Length: 137
Image (cartoon, rainbow, N blue to C red; front, side, top):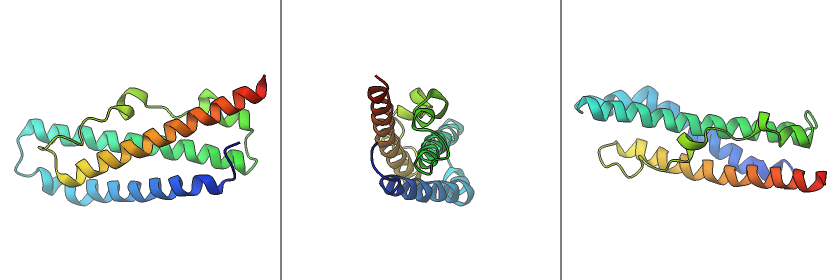
């Protein structure tokens, strides 16, 4: 397999930090950032905030499943199954938003960093699945 559970600690810590940052942005800064903006931009901010949240929750769910594999709580085959696969494909892989100058810089930063993290974990997911598939044959 890809290594010990230590391998996943970096992405786990990064995901947790981004989740906290996203929560703080949504709770404390989003309303202020929107106050003088036109309705269509406020709607875009809400949409993009949900995209950040979707990416991060999908990544965290996948990482927790992999930690369960390493802890022996579920089998490697279960951890590589569709049930525990990284999901959210079309919404989460879309890189748009980070380059939208109408959006607040804090949100654009979260969009860009959550996209990079999601894409890295998508590659890890693919590697784990291919490894388990190869071992099965």
